[in-house]
Image 1 (tube, each protein chain N blue to C red):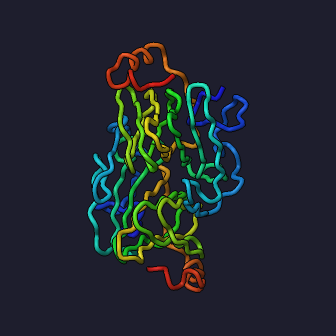
Image 2: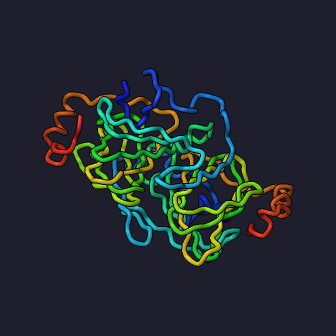
Image 3: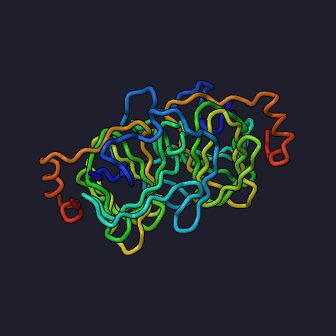
Length: 176
Length: 176
């Protein structure tokens, strides 16, 4: 099961572990992650595209802060959705803070749909169903910040799904 | 005392309170803070420049996430240093994650000095002395993420200050 796009792991075996949150720091030193071509950061592993998954498509994920024993109570990740890409439609107790930094995209949050453009900041409150989508031709890239200790995403309830499938703002947009 | 640039408050009376961390949320709803002209975000108060302070200069601060009862364990702020601006030379237990998004600047972290350019990500580990500086003509703007619950910054010890004043990388750079 790799349904949970936000915490998708390239080699996960089904168990969820928030990286670094319950472990002693492997390394906790000041560092500069220099920005490089094609939205890569020095010292940050690039996790390969997967063309298709279960409930998501074309999602790239880079953990910039949180994978090297950093002790802050939050992680900073960079996600990129390729053409036609979308994250899982999901909800969870933990919050998201999203900053759009590459191209543009759309966010479904509850029964609202917002366009995200350069440096727009999106806050997703606890338990709000949400999905990020790329409907354009170029890549849609964004930082996503989360608590280091966080719950796992869950599927929407039937009523919630029906609500989004019937809402004028979201019914044409959401992907399952 | 407004020495602590990172947590500088326009009307503070000397007491430190991490915004929103120990209070019931005033508002905790999903929101889009749209990016606007001159690096302002919709729904985010702009805190005016102060031309000069005690130990810092020309610092603008916007709390994008953390001032409206958001429950995530971190805050997202946008700081901007005007021409000749610098943050306080300080240290604290809590970590910083900095993303450069406007112009360029310099960061002193321990006895190293790094140039920060577009989308470079800097991690400052606990208790590392640090200072951010603008030595260019245009504004230097960056996101800065911190734990919602955090300690107050303190001045450097004499030995630490001496170390930076003698280090080849930092001695010409630091400002008191």
